[in-house]
Image (cartoon, rainbow, N blue to C red):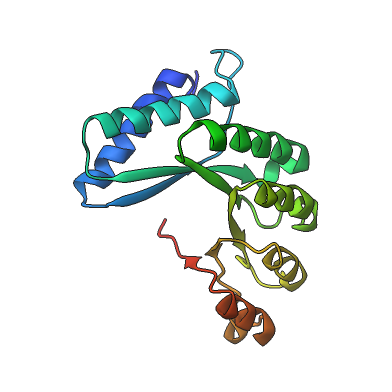
Length: 190
């Protein structure tokens, strides 16, 4: 059996449902983040996956929903640097063709997989090409070296950052760096 979102049409419908739910809740600005994926058995490519999300956003806008929706393409650490490069290229292509809907990238996924150094060059290049960066860092303890490395890109926003505070074992310098550079932290409810 295929997963529920195995075709571009499925992705379009799910995207519209999600946007409508947030609009119904009174949300005025929504950033969707999603890892592009392909399903060979249905012919869905990573590109058609993103196109389907963008079409869902466009259709909701045409319905005059009172919500501004943007998209971050997620780089899942479990995919490794080569997949990250492909996602960056996809994001770059859509940054130019989506009329500002695709904003950039979100580095996320299992924080115990790989190391941030594997992504610094890739993300730095993405930043130089105009993509915004949301980075999930300091999600677990004992990631000081990785956090310092990724902070110096710098990110436009930090996801989680649970262990960024000196009170949770991080260095006061990292906490001060985030404050000085006014890097927003996004906390999430799951």
